[in-house]
Amino acid sequence: MAFPPLTHVALTVRDLSVSVPWYQALFDAEPVIDEDTDPHMHHTVYLLGGTLFGVHQHGTAAPGETFSEYRVGLDHIAFGCASRAELDKWASRLDELGIAHGGIKDAGYGSGVSFRDPDGIALELSAPNEHLLAAKEALARGVKRFLGTMLAENVAAHRLTRSLAGELAHHRHLGPVDELVVELAA
Figure (spheres, rainbow, N blue to C red):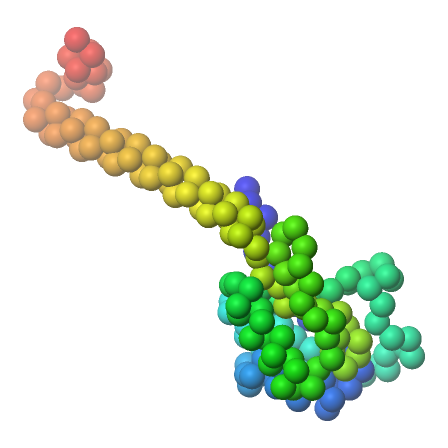
C-alpha cells in the first residue's frame, strides 16, 4: 500500500495581521479559508496546486523564541519550480517583494533559493536539475510500461471471460457446470 500524499501544511505564526499579507503577496492568491476553528485559534489557508497551506494563530501566545531549523521539528518547507528558468523568475519575484534571500544555490539534485517568513520560518523555492528530471522521467516511463502491461493483461482476461461466458450461454442445455468444465478442458 502506498503512503498517502501530503494534503496540507500548517504553520503557527506569531501575528496573522503580519503573516497573512506577507503570504498573500508571496503566493499572489487570496485565502480559500479564513476562520476561527475553535475559540482559541484562527487559521488562514491558501490552495497551492493541490496542497493546502495554512497559517495559524493560537489564543495562547507563542513563546518569545524565534524559529530555528536546528530545533527538533520542522527544518524548512520547499515549493517546487518546474525548471531553473522558473526558479530564476521566482528569485526575481522575491526581490520585487523585498524578501531577503540567499541567492540561488546549486546542488547535485537541483537548485534552490532559501528565504524566511516574518517569523523566521525557513522556506525554499527549488527546481530539479537535468539528472533528477531524467530519473523522474525514467520512473514515469517504468510506471507507464507497468500500467500498460497490466491493462493488456486485463484486456486479455476480459476477452477470455467474455469468451467463456459465450460458451456458457451456448451450452446451457448441457446441465451441470461440471459437465461443461470437462468439455472445455478436453
